[in-house]
Image (cartoon, rainbow, N blue to C red; front, side, top):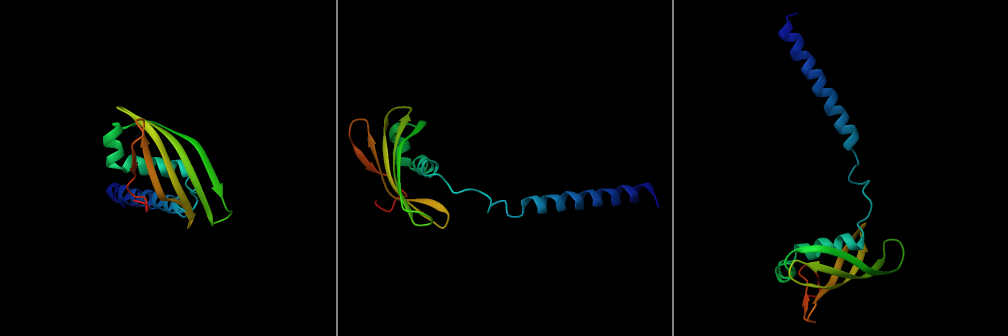
Length: 127
């Protein structure tokens, strides 16, 4: 057997070993993730809302002030209040959330600017 054949066979064996390790390690990794927290879901929603981000000028800080959860198991709801600091302005977020299928989702949300103006947040059903 020539040296080139040995190198080719060695590379193929190495690639198979790497593929086997990745398949075994990756199996079920998405199902091992814990449920999202209400704060993380609300922050992502506000970050994705162009009206809020355009008004306050990019989120610098997001601080969850209070989360009131009700219910148990898969039938939980929560009301989240958070303080959001932007580059130009700040405000408060209030979001009503629901826990279903292992994930939190926002039912209704509104953002109140520092001057008292309230705007609905896109992606919430209450818009």
